[in-house]
Image (tube, rainbow, N blue to C red; front, side, top):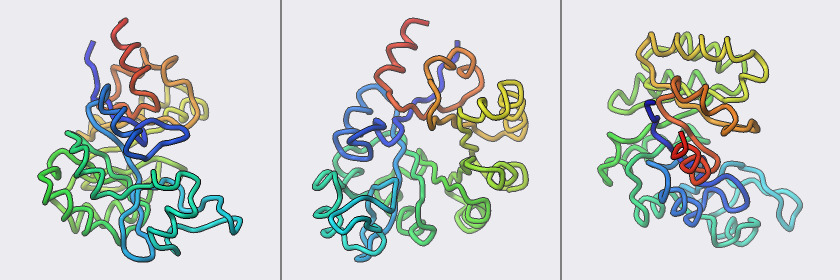
Length: 232
């Protein structure tokens, strides 16, 4: 059976996701990592999935704070890291950068180029408009569009210049496996790579049926996934 590329979803999803320890652990089992990048008030590229987080003031917004303030206020504290630091310390062979701010793409691309990682990187977004613009303005880059709602689902059909479509496993619970698999076959017919990611489904339970369809699995727990694949 063909084995897709495995990426650690935020490294390992959970309490310390999107941190150096999570990425380091993921790379023991996975081919690469998926991470979320957003810009702080002082221009740093910080690794955080959620821009809003609980803090001493009640709720904080990362884009309105300096990196130092985020480290002081965020529940993860000093574990909150930056994009350049991840690449410097870990040098992953393959990386999926999920953009949380559109204005950071040029800086992200320059950093990946300096590290000679651009060829093995995918830059993704859940906005069809942004994906279309990136595909046009940054032709050397591999641009991915993530399905998070009906608008982004429609965008995967209408947007040209994409490298990949990032399909949530959860789509099965809404539309059924027949629709899920036929949609992926349609993407493959357009020579698009398919990345399968998970929100709140049991990825292991669906793995035998998803394996033949996916080019890349963005796994919540790469260690568990690797053990399961070893038994097939």
